Length: 152
Image (cartoon, rainbow, N blue to C red; front, side, top):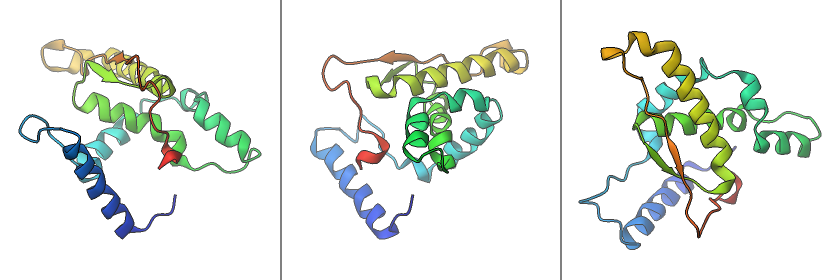
């Protein structure tokens, strides 16, 4: 998706300002720009090697966009987004993940990836523990819909 680097930087700063204005305490919460943390991309790459393409082709957002495009080309970013989300969750060993109903399917894929990696690599992990903690959904009663990628 094309973007203007200056507009993206300004939008990022406005978002951070909104977080702090809404009451997030920087002394109690860590706020950072995901794209500035190389480990997100590195883990995403590793997880793509453990993510069957068939899982990603089943994702509702991908199927809807592909249908909308008349079966034409759909960017790889949309197809691989659930793996990036899995990396975001698994990197921090999150046990509860606040997720809207529209993102629940993505969390299910993250859980599938987690289970697969844990099963394959448990025997090589320190003390033969799981590599990743299995994330559970935390769905609030209000605001259950999370902004989509196309919402801005």
